Image (cartoon, rainbow, N blue to C red):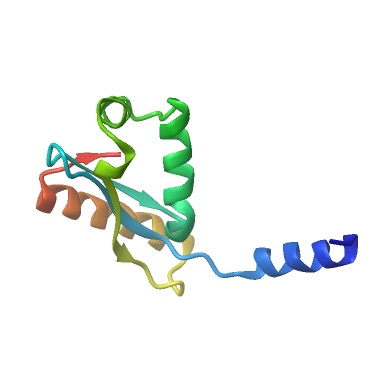
Length: 111
């Protein structure tokens, strides 16, 4: 890959629109669930799984469950996706509102 091609790929990646949303991580072995929010819902699972595999997840109860079970016992599910038309402030408020709603619905722990 030459430098010009690499620059083109990086520019294309940066131009991709990001979608904010609410997600759930569920442990099928225990039935436990955690609900979180992300401004980049499509790529959030990769980062979360990476920190869990390293043992450096900032959410201690999720890390303990991950360590006690197999990675195959965990499922990442997108629950809500926000419209990209929302302003940053409205998006932030809506993410909090929807995350709280899903936390109650699933009897989950917040992330």
